[in-house]
Length: 436
Length: 201
Image 1 (cartoon, chains in turn brown, purple):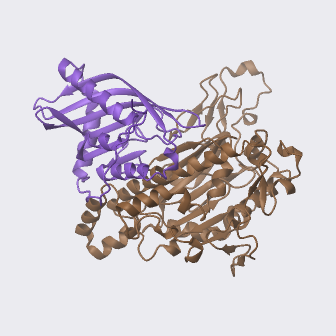
Image 2 (cartoon, rainbow over the protein chains, first blue to last red):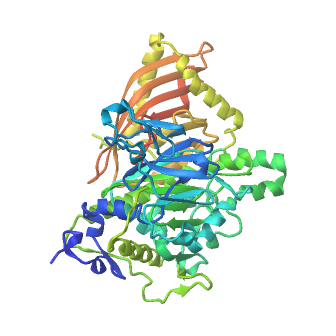
Image 3 (spheres, helix red, strand yellow):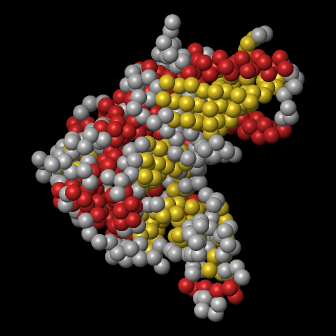
């Protein structure tokens, strides 16, 4: 019999080793559960510390569907407050970001400090003497932790520390960050946002997928071949990627990696497609610092050659931070934050802007089209399964000295199996969610 | 009678070096953008009429997917600019698109490969352009046009996309009687929201 709701099957049948049931994507009643238990039940990326550059900075974000305000109250003191008045639920902050010591609800005037305490309720005598302000602060995310600027939160007191959650995936996050001469990433350059009609997990299925580029991005590779030839663009995917030095890895807690860098030769800068202003900036840099230093610095302009996926919502791709923001079971926003490198020459950071615009305009749009085609195909209830068994017949190579990390060929679907196994683990159990 | 989508194809050439996006060019661009607020009503009726006709022609080229002909409307030192933030400096901030002539050629050639899944099979495009105001500089060498556009894009079996943009053009005189676009800035009213991959705005 055809299962029409995810409730028709136990979790170990919905997500199997080799396949996943369509209702895990299509059932609209599963979505609120995911947004509650996953986004918040595990460490969820909130924002970057450099987006809160001063004390009293704030930024609005979402954790699943929960509207939050992340605030900074000290040198490295962050709070993630529910953007929800404790009185009748109106949001108390409308600006996307800025500086504020207090947030006042525009509905009845309740005012809160930026660490969430209720400062005053208007006309207090109407509440009588039993009213305690300390009972009516903004709810907040109990655990907020930072790793090298990346701020995460969880409502689940049983989660291991963030450091353990990121585990060996930190090696690649470090590699991404350490491309900055000052060893810090700066996220103050705006964002490009795309949206597609389809479930958010379709994007995750693709997040470390080395199988699709030659087909999904054929227009981009073909254009690059016609125009530029040589090794520009994505030529490292044009032959069987499993015969290249590229690889994928899987990590505990659902994280994954597609390491393109190994197949991209010596210089990343040489492989960049022609970029608006590229020649001008290269020349200016050579003039300022000399040829040798210029070309060293220019290596910091393009993407790092990795797709690193930190479950459930943070992808490192190109020279950007991509945040997956599910809006509904059938609608997903992808927010590409541009980043700059602390200590890099202005020319390099300027180039990063124009390079950041390349893939969303020339590559991701075809990915989003593929995701929407999957979504349309998923509307056939009787075709129940999505397959992810490519490479399953081969025992994965364990990475020595890294607990639970495996290394697989580029087109292996192990990263998809890996995140869905962890997804299932969370979804099939009760997860304690505690607000402060 | 012709079909809805005409074609015009771009000759595939090795790209020319792009040497004009200098710091001075960016500075000039930002100054030009910020000057918009100083413009009063457009009073040169002939300029407004000519520019309206120009915009309608441009809209028709885009709507019938004659992208190569559309690109012919641009100078070789052009910028097609779709900001992500209203007041950002594109030297320090990412945009939706900040294309020089070469990147515009790349886009059009990508469409023409036939493998641009996002464009296949044939997106249908239509746009309504209105609120046209236009001014010619005293020296007669440049014009500015501001207008609004409501752009529709339809695909098979997919929801229709709509985009609302404020348009701002810098035209440069090409010869006695014709003009080319040096800058086209298309400012989406919801540039901070998730976009459904617009073709050209």
